Length: 364
Image (tube, rainbow, N blue to C red):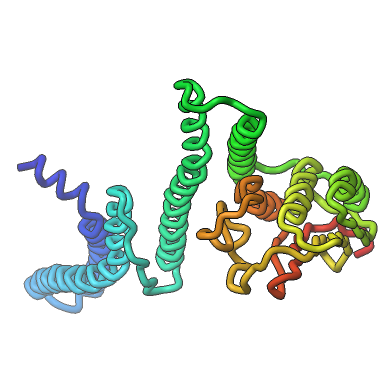
């Protein structure tokens, strides 16, 4: 029996609060009542206002009213306290139930905050946490699905060709080996891009050692590295770059620019790719513009998602050179540095832009 009562005490916060506060209220009322009673009795006895018989009757009456007032005050306080505590604990019970559902693998509906105090703030934070966890789980499932989809075709091709070669059904030739090499290179690029994306995602909760980078020099170096490819494809690289100093990591910014330029070359349909770098008030804005494959307006906000394809049903040979992760890595890195990414397009002419925080001068 005692064990059950102990379990009841441990499991019900409401009863704990009521009993503790009730005890405090009872002690306060009793001390105050006893003090008043003793003072009144002392006054009556000191000034001999009544006789001994009436003095005893007076003391008994005071004690009776003291007990009655104390019990009544405790009951009223307990009722008011219970209603108040119940109102406070109600959202906590909903939070407990929602937490239990999350532990079981379900994602509860958002809980509407009933106040703006600490419990209301806790409820808002819980809703945001549940939303983020749900989005993370959906991204994980989508990523696994996309990876399996991206790997299925090249692996099937490799297995089919190698099986035919090993069984003697097909004889090798230069074109066949070149095709097998391209499939293997695509798988290698895909794994490397996944590795880069995973590395930057893992660094979200790690403080970055950002340094001051002369962005104009880094951009010039990156553009110079693509000169050979531009000459090979007959595409002009037109650059207009202002001086500026940004905060970030040199390797990360180089990877951002490499991915943007590779994407531009891969889907370019014009004769020019224009790169601009411009210092604005609190950020440095970089753009890469060119004529490219059509991108619908509704896809402009989606091209930075992992494995996103503008037209999944359309398979082009040049898509085999892209992994669908380059722009996702750009977004991950830039946002990690406190910048933003975006795309402006009229359907044919596309301008990919990124912003990076600049180093502010001491004077302002």
